[in-house]
Image (cartoon, rainbow, N blue to C red):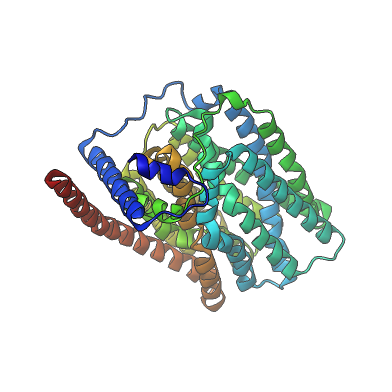
Length: 465
C-alpha cells in the first residue's frame, strides 16, 4: 500500500503494470464495500434537515450564489428566447435550423463533458466558475453587438452556440458540484431544489419580459446585451464569498486513467447508475421540448412573440412549482424518478393533441412539474451518493447524459416536425420518453445483477486470500 502511494506521488511517472493491477483491485474492493453498505442500509446517512423550504439561504455564500443566479438566469432566458426567434427570422422559419442551433450548443458537452468534470475535481471550483462566467458574458456581448448593428447571420448564431457549449463543458459540472461545498450534505437537496426554483422563476420572467421588449424595441439584439450585463451579478457574488466557509475537498492530483476510474465508479454503484441511466434516456428527447414550444406557438397556433413568451412561461410555472415542492424533500426516492419520467412522457403526448391554445398552455404546467421532478431528484441522488473526491467526475458523467442527447434528439425531432408538423414531433417525443424510461429500468436491473455477481466474486476472493 505504501509503495503504491509513493508511485502515485511522483509527478510525471507512469505506473507499472503491477501497480496498475493493484490499484484496480483496490478500486474494486472499495466499490464492493460501498455497494454492500448501500444494499445493507449501513451507508452514510444524510443528516436530518431542518429549517423549512428556504433553509439553505441561511448560508452566506449560498445567498450570494442564489442572488447572482436569479439575475443571470433571467438574462439567460431572455437571450434564449431571442436566440430562437432570431434563428427563425434569419432562416425564414426553419425548424431544422432551430434544431441544429440547439444541437450545436449541447454537442461539446457530449464530446468533452467528461473532461470538464475531471477539471472540476482538479482545480478550485470558485475560480473555474469565475473564468467560465466571464467568457459567457463576453459571448453574449459580442452577439448582441452583431445583432444590433445588423451584421448578424445565422452562422454567427451557430458559432456562438458551439462556443457556449464548449465553456459549459467546464462550467456546468463545476457549478453543480460546487453547491455541496457551500451548504454541506445536510442542505444539499434543498439547495439543488432552490437552484431549480431560481432557474424556473427566471424561465417564467425571462421569456415574458423578452417577448415584450422585443416587440417594444423592435429587435432581439438588446436581449443579448442585457444578458451580458447580468453576468456582473454572478461574478460579484463569487468574488464576495467567504473562502473560509467553503468545505472544498483537496484537489485530485493529475494522474492517468481518471476518466476510466470515474466510469467504473458509476458502473459499480446502482444508486448512481439508476438516476444517470434514466436521465440519459429521458433527456434524449426532452432537451428539444423548449424548441417544440416555439414551433407549436408559432406554426400551430399562430402566436406572436409575446404569446410565445407566455407559452414558455407557463411551462416554467409548472417547473417552478415542482422545484418548490422538491425543496421540502431531504432525499428523493426511485419511485419519484420513474413516476416523473412516465408523467412527462404522457404530458408531452397530451400537449401535442391539444386542440386549443389555452388548453395547450394549461397542459404545459403539469409537464413542467414532471420534468423538474426528474431533474431535481436525479441531481440530488447522484450528488449525495458520490464521494467528495469523485463528485466532479460523477457530475461530468451526469451532465454528459443530461445534455448529450440533444445533438441527436433535437435535429431528429426538428426533421420530424418539418415532415409531419410540430404536433407529430411533440407526440413522438413523448412516446420515445416512455420507451426510454422502460429501457433505463431494464438496463439498471441487468447491470445491477452483474455488479452483485462481481461483489460476490471479490468477497469470495478476499475470504480465500
